[in-house]
Image 1 (spheres, rainbow, N blue to C red):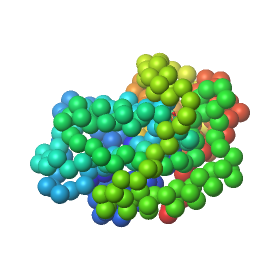
Image 2: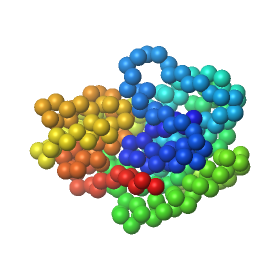
Image 3: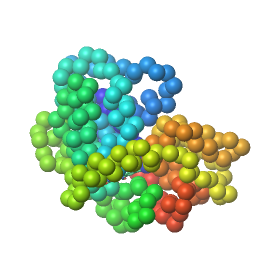
Image 4: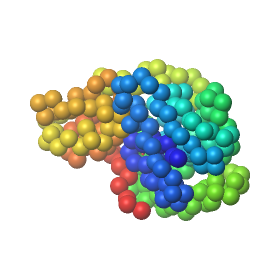
Length: 259
Ligand SMILES: Cc1cc2nc3c(=O)[nH]c(=O)nc-3n(C[C@H](O)[C@H](O)[C@H](O)COP(=O)(O)O)c2cc1C
């Protein structure tokens, strides 16, 4: 079984490739975030079934929606098989691996293989952050197509390979203080604005992985449970959606390749 979270499609692509390779079932973490029921989601695991997590790195850490899911989920029949993880990132993960390990161990589960795959950047909400150029996007995707099979083979054969881009500078501060500030203050959906270019196509509603957007009088309205995945901004065909002023004049990105 593969649990995944994805906003702009990179991690969904990785999860889909894994699912095809291992013939494993995919579960979208966002689907469980949608449920208003307070019941912990329960999954039945076969004794030798692989269990994997795929998600994007957010602010050098695990997206809070993923940490919440790990804390809530129940695995029935779990047989101490190590849980693997592939995170996608724009360029560096910091200590997201340690954060993931802590969350998994707190559930009395084991983990062993933790990898990262660099993919096109989706973060555009702060000064100095923008999408990659088309050339860099294409190069990253080509590399990912080469690296992912190697990672899948390592998972399959229980080999440890060094496939994790930690980054180099200020990692403790990035995965520590900056991540905490992100998780506390950056998940608000109040700054979202929809301009006159909106055609009421509803793509933002459909793409939101946690069902946080509705249409009122043909315009998107955010319901207060944003994960900051930015899928709504990136998917909008008329660029009608902005996050305050910070996303103005920035590029847009969405992974839409089939293979
Ligand atoms: C809120 C947010 C924070 C991000 N933080 C990081 C980061 O700390 N390091 C990094 O390399 N990429 C970062 N990114 C880029 C994403 O991790 C990367 O583009 C990822 O592949 C997106 O996955 P998705 O398309 O499945 O949503 C961030 C993206 C978002 C939306």
